[in-house]
Amino acid sequence: MKLVLDSVALARPHWSLAAGGTFGPGIHLVSGDVGSGKSTLALLMAGLSVPDRGTVTREGIGQAILSFQFPEFHITGLTVADECRSWNLEPETVLASAGVELPAKRPVLSLSRGELKRLHLACILARECDLLLLDEPFSSLDCPGKEWAAHLIGRRRSGITVVFTHEQSIFPHTDHIWEIRNGVLADCGDLPGALRTWEHAPALLRRLIAEGKIPADLTQESLMEAACRTQE
Amino acid sequence: MIAFENVRFRALAVPSLVLPAGLTTLIGPNGAGKSTFLKLCAGIAEPEKGTVTIDGQSPRKTEVGYVNEFPDRNLLFSTVHDELASPLRFRHTPCAETVREVRACAERWGIAALLEREVKDLSGGEKCLVALATACITRPRVLVLDEYDSHLDAGRCAVAERVLRSSGADYIVRCTQQMETAANSDRLLFLEKGRVVHFGEPTAVFANLTATPFYPLSWRCRS
Image 1 (cartoon, chains in turn green, orange):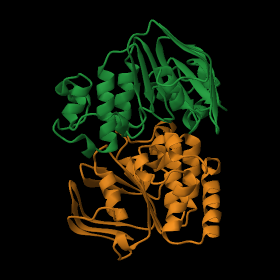
Image 2 (image 1 turned 120 degrees about the vertical axis):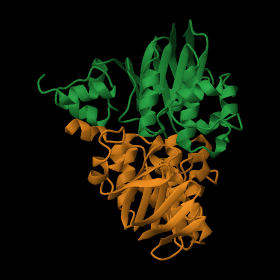
Image 3 (image 1 turned 60 degrees about the vertical axis):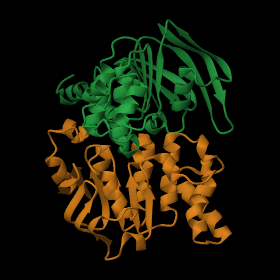
Image 4 (image 1 turned 180 degrees about the vertical axis):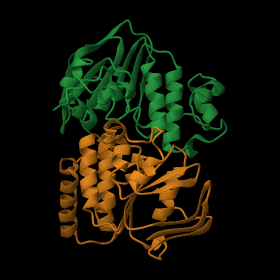
């Protein structure tokens, strides 16, 4: 199972994006500045957008799901329960896994944005799929919500998961890091080696690396373990 | 000061609270009432009971710049230039001055390259930056900012921090889920289930949150 970006290029009057590389099974993190093309890349990988040049090829991938960065774009039901059913899921099951109290009859549009994001992620993460593309999954979530989402995402042990994010504190278990630099997708490699070349690394991680403390992963536990090391 | 007296609005209840001038950041779980609190500060909502005043005045009689947590709900016009210009045009600012102010504001926020773009083509983070710049362009006395940073990268967050601090606003009330950002405030207000649970300087408030995910990771790692 893999998704291959072969000399993909997209040009618009104000910016451009070039991407090449192979996304295999595991959890991939894609970072980049505001407006660098993360969401555009997610659309290309989901097949919802077509590049000007190059090809996006899926091999051995059946179902794919894309989570847009704005949870409000996903709303199709009037109530929380309707929204769950629109994903072909039982509301009771989803709401039990959401980790917060969301009354089934509550109108979806009355939820706070964070509550909406949590409902949306609970639905998406309850579904099985081969390719899961998550555009800014942590935005609007509160800190417990980010930990909840990171845990559920990191638990995916099959399929290809790609997390597009600028999150600075809370990450899922991550296998591979990519970043968009000056309009080009760069492959930083597998962890932990990727951390040495990751230009968008959070400040805390950069500090740890400067001290020679390379975490094995991006999870809170790994960052804490590295921070607490007294000797290298 | 921003004063809450016997305020009730939906699930939010604030018996008595005074926010001094400066940068106040609301933190707390999703659904705690943070956005509702901010809407009361901005005068977008009025309490069902009690009063909210800013230096003795109703928020609706105070100049307030407001950013909604839903980025698309902030944008009214087609192009970035027109969006930024709108608060100036609404107050009949002369055209030449409007053009000058829009350019200067866009430069301050690092979005000058976006001025001719259509807002529908912007990324999520770019929409947030345009909303922030638009809220600030008339230099209001009060800025009320609802999770403007949820789509911003670290570099843009740093720019926003610098520009907001030099905005000249007497009161900046915002909410964020980035605890490293929250730590850089004059005071924090922790809301939960519609109630103010903690209020004070960041060190004092975070001291109550050490066992929770709200405690900044960098603070945890330094200790």
